[in-house]
Amino acid sequence: MDDHVSAELQHVRNYWAEMKPNSPIYDFLLGQIELVSAIHGQIKARLKVIPVHVNSKGTLHGVTSSCIMDWAGGLAIASTGLNSTGLSTDIHTTYVSTAKEGDTIEIEAKANKVGATLAFTMIEIRHCGDGGKVIAHGTHTKYVKK
Image (spheres, rainbow, N blue to C red):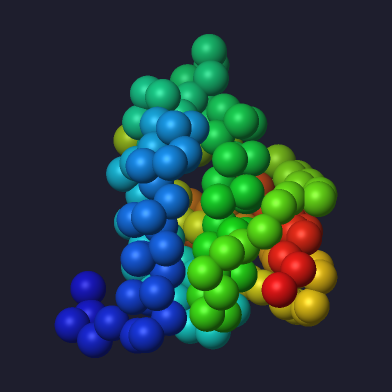
């Protein structure tokens, strides 16, 4: 990893460190996630798929993907400098492919607009290998009244 840590990445890491112990579901499913980069309005993270992430078929469970959409959309908003990322009003996830236990997935989230009351984000989950094949993509809208 690069020795240089952007102000946005440090802010997002601090935000996540404060949020994680107060959110048992995030801690359970995403406790091992690694924030790898952040710029204004955008974050990237990686997660190794472990047994708690998979369904009865041994592939990435939809609830894990949806949880990632929720988490990543909020952190993309946090990367704009906000210390509170609001309340979810809509989360949409489209499942395109899957991952299996042992795979490493990459998450990229972008805050398309952070307004006075609403924030709109787009999230993509893809394989780190396999040519970056998309696993799921979605949108997340949050009420962020400042």
